[in-house]
Amino acid sequence: MVSRKQTKIWRYVEEGSFLKLKAYLRKHKDVELNFSQGKRQRSLLHVVCSHGDDAILRLLLKHGADPLRRDRNGDTPLHLAAKRALKYGKTDYDDLVVPLRKHCPAALNTPNHTGVTPSALLEGIRFGQGASLGERCPQQADPEQEWREKLFSECQDEFSEMFGQYDADFLRDDEDEEDYGDWAERIRREYMTKQQARVQRGGPSSRSRKSKNEREEEVKEEERSRRELHARLEKEHKEYLERAARKHEETQRGRKTRYEERCAATFHSSTSSSGVEPSGMLGYNDIPWPAPRGSLDEMLAVMLHGADRSDVSAFRKLIRRQQALWHPDKFSQRCDGRLLERDRQKIMNTVTALSQELNRLAQSLR
Picture 1: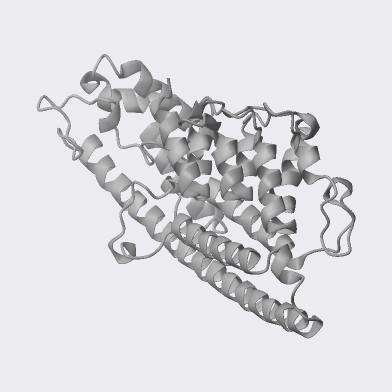
Picture 2 (picture 1 turned 180 degrees about the vertical axis):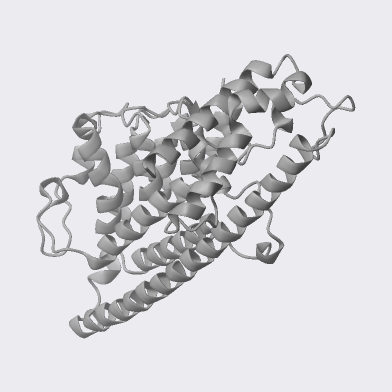
């Protein structure tokens, strides 16, 4: 039976939502990707190959999707990729067939229920004056393909680092702005739509009927469009990075302000501003952690935000104030009688770890 997580992954694959899928797989690394759905009993890789989405194909292969899984007709994903390459030409061959062959060479000679292998489907097919698909000849570097791979790589790396970083920080000034995931997904969708339309318009059969001049004009037009696309992507990517830097600064400044306000309310009054119990008792979530759901490094970043590290004397004083605030013994003197018993050990473990990080930082300044 297909689980809820698998249903969500299936939806992302059908929609072509690469970045959402990547983020979800990153958060749920244990989810099983080798399952089938529908009357045709197709797997995720079958769906991807029928849609022609090479980015999601590579992502699923990286996360363990099985390229030898068969559908109701015994076809593997490579069968569908080969059929798509026969219909649309070299682009789909490079995007779908090549990754599958490289990842699982055995799939090329795996027959379906009628005994047909992907190798047999591709046998003898040629692109222009080149060699057959089965004997793929060396091709010149495709600048468009190189640019796409570069863009996808940057999108994946930056999105992996930044995904969810600002989820808990709602900024009014940015509420109508497009975030990185939306921007990257929109650019990718536009590119895929344009690429598929171009491939369908200029498939092998129609290309052979065009004159030499028509083909030259088409190449020039494609080159102009490619340069325009590159310039636009570079401009929008630069603008996004500038917005992200501003947003990060505003977020950290807001976190530090809230941290200082909660420290004052929790450590210097009988009640907490974050909804403590009427008795004044403190649970784990009532402690004014600098980054409540963050790592120790993120907590330190909030504490020390805005500090001028070049001014060693002032920076050392800031660290000493934080050391006094989070020293386990001093923390116990202030709050031990107010800690809820169920959270006491967890609170003290975090306080101790935070204190040790501050001590290490102070030692590095000597």
